[in-house]
Every structure is written in C-alpha cells, then in structure tokens.
Length: 423
Image (cartoon, rainbow, N blue to C red; front, side, top):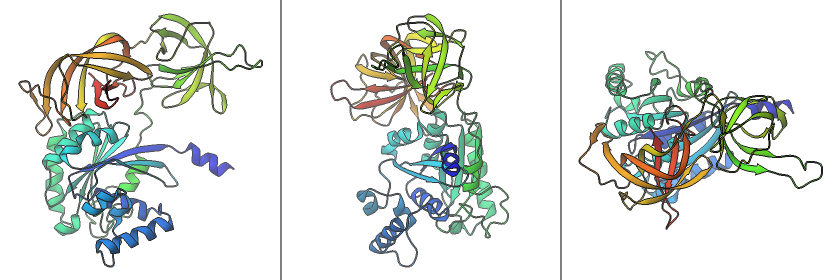
C-alpha cells in the first residue's frame, strides 16, 4: 500500500516541446519514453510494424510513438497538440508535443499554457532560426519559468563542440531579451539517444546533465504563487442529508497563496469578511491548502457566496476592474473585431466583453511592436484593451497564471477565439 501512496504523492512536471518542423521533437519524446522504459510492449510492437510500413529498415522510428494522428504519420509531421504521460521513480510527467509550423502557433500556446518547462529544439545544422525565436517568445509570454534548449542532431555535425558553443552563444544573446529566469543548454542526438536519458560517450566535453536528469531534478515547487491568497469558487456544496444539513462549503481550486483554518478572508465582489472555519479535501479535513490543490472551504459566517465569486485574504486583494489590458493570441479564422462583443471566461467567472482598442500587433520574430497594423488574424499576438460587463478579480499574468489569464469565446459559435494574458 505504501508504494502506491508514495507514487500518488510524486511531483508532477508538465512540459512542452517546440521547435521547427523536422527538428526531431517527436523522435526526442519517443527516445525519452523508450530509454526510460515507459512504453508498453504492445505499443512498441505497433510502432515497429508502422516503422516497416514507412520504410524504415532496422531502426525503430521512435517519432511514431507520439505522432498518433494518421495524417501526421503520413506526412511525418506533428499537427495537433499530442499529450503523453510517463513516470520515472523520481517524478511523473505530462508532455505536450506541439507542432512546429507557423500556422499552428495557437496550438503551441494551448500546449504551453499549463507547462512548468519548455524544451525548445534547435537543429545543430541550422542554429537559431525564426521559429526558435517565435517559440522562445511564446514561452516567455506564457510565463514558463524553465526553458531547456536542446541542440539536436549533433551526430550530423560530428558532435562538434565548437558548433555547439557557437549556437549556444547566439541563443544566449537572443534569450537575454526575454523574461525567463532559468535557461539551460544540452547538446543531444535524439536519434541515437546521446544525452537524452544516458550520457553521451561521443561528447565527453559536455559536463552538464542529461535531459532526463534535468527534467527529474528541476525545482518547480516555488513556481506557483504562494503569496497572494486566491480561491475562485466553482461550486457551492449543500448536502441534502440530515447528518450534514448545516454544511455549506465552497469547492474550488486554490489559485494562489496558502489558505489556513482561522485566516481572515474577504469574499469578492460583495466585500463581506469572515474567517476560514475549516478546509476539507477528498481525504478529509486538512490544515492548509495551496496551489494547485482542489478543496472545499467552509466559513464561520453565513455569507451569500456563489460560483464565480473569489475568496481572498482581507489584507491582500486582487485588482477589481472592468477594464483590462491584455496580450492576446488570436485562435480564430475570423479576425478580431474592434468593438466586437465576446463571451469571456476568467477562473470560474463567466462574463461578456467588448474590444475597446487594438493597441499593436507583435512581430514574433523580431519582438517589434507593429502599431500601424491593427488587422489581427489567426495565430497573431497583439495587445488589446477590453471592457467587461462585470468586474473581474485579476492579478498580472506574470505574477499569477491562474488569475491572470482569460479565454475569449465567440458567442454565436461557442468557439474559443482568443487566449489572453493580463498585463
């Protein structure tokens, strides 16, 4: 029994992979799964069979482990975001394998929005290219704290140390403009497994960690905001049983800070204050709750609290406003409409909004602001100003990814048209 609880308590690292087309993302993930023994026998047999079909003799085509969509296998590329799960004795992992094509920028935003770490692949023959810059900028924009640049295909440049140093120097110059606190560089060959799970004998000059060791040991405990107490209410629990007829709990997921029994809290938007009477979880009462735990909070006083409200610390409150500045990644075929009306989702709160202003579009490859270009089409990233029908309780996205992000929805089609980060 102990071993299973230990397994459940293991820390989960979510990471995303990005890079240009054919930089070897799918092969790298396949190699990670294959060398860390995270593949079932029947999966391996299916891939061996598919490898022969594609015409690979001898070597198993590890990219086919992740290219689950048939059209991807036929074209040899990744189109949609593919999620994969695996675990080692030290950690559990969820991988979001995102596409490299420019026209799939929105897919990278989807995959990276919940990631703790991004692996950006760079082809050792090509070095820093436009797509590398684009993916690095998106990782920075989405508040990913850890980025690992994997300089791949070292086997095609004869495992040259000078080539690695040259690319690393270019990447360091570029990355200095970005807001990423932890950047690492690893020379690898995904095809042959050099420095992926096992250390490379062909690159004795590289003294850093392998990729898997980096993933297992990178410190993500302090990535969440443990300062600002934020608890968006998703559901009010009122059991209809005689045993619990007085029970009134507010269920949700902690979006920031540490909540403890006895803490003085304020409920927004009403502004009423109370104290936390107790905190319940799936396993019974707990002493404290912190992100990203799901729990039920009970208050000492009977206050009218409903879905979409937020329980916060009385002396540490978010911004309460109807006007918001956003960086938005546009995801719809139909361009963004100035003065257009959209539905909006923020934490557990639903509202509607109007686009008041389009400030500028970002040229993702040079990071320049294009103030004259106000036509925001699919995959563009822009700064806009919106006004909502009800106040939202927000923090800056760089401070809190949960309370700083919103989703824009087309009310006619119910399609998600934009992902926004509050500035």
